[in-house]
Image (cartoon, rainbow, N blue to C red):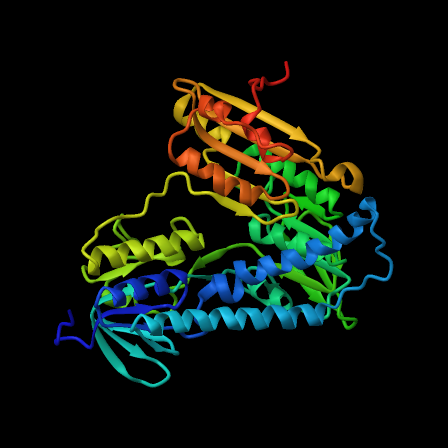
Length: 461
């Protein structure tokens, strides 16, 4: 397949989930492929994102489960937690997973360059550590996203803050932590650290956390923050941060309040990782936030340059990047053209308890279809009958009234992510409320409520 005019058929910039999948599938199809990764193979998800974060969620949740075990007769005296030991185990596993990514790429026949790559022209990149210049028929940008923080001019004292990447190395644990942000990263880490015994305060500029999620989900999650002992301050942001000689950060808010904590974490957003890539130099169009603009086939405006994953700022989820990368490789090298379908993508937020959602929110469905029907339930799960936990399970089914098709399902509760993955199959297939109703319940389970809700919800008069 190799065009002798170029060194490679495909050069992938970025060794995260999307880039690795694309490189493997293209190489297995017979293409000569190379991947450049400047940090560690596996990208954000494996190295500094969803994988280590989920380990931290587990570590935090075990503390609650040990406490709740007393309600089931278990003696829990003398239990202790070793954060240093946990971090060591977590990073050992992350190292193992990163190594698997490298072995999978090499095993498929692709070459890995452990250094940064930048564009020279539309068919050429320079490897910045070695200085080597290589050419490729097609180039795939898969550099992912990066943390955004205000500049020191925008927020004096921002240098005294940590970013979410730093959370995986924070040791010892502080007594107090302030987290700026109201998205899923901020709230997940708020629950993690609260569960590990840290006094956590979340500060968010908006009126409701989890912007873009269903309004009921926002309200339930807000209530769960309070149950977890997490303080929430909305409608304001930090004006300045001062570091005292005692090591305490003092955060002056724009509402006039001042907060104190040993650690301040900024979790206020992520942006496409295109700085210094040289995309503009070769004519690749970027949007106002620096994301690569692509069409439905992951093509940029430069014919031989493509992009997948968070760097395109479409749906910034690891499974989406993987499917985009796979579709690109099958289309360009495998003779099996297909493209990513962005409808009904299941999503989880690993707060405690967690959120699982697929399809439209109530507001989105009303805006698109007008008349809709809602089915809701809010109950104490069986497990919490004896353990003293006040956590409940919330479920909401959004139905298009014209044909009874289920267009959205939203769950907040333990194992919500596991449930939403399964129910997403039905939603993707266009299941109706009658299809849900005809499905026999599995008892006793929380999930059975999804097929036993019969009465339409009506707003209180």
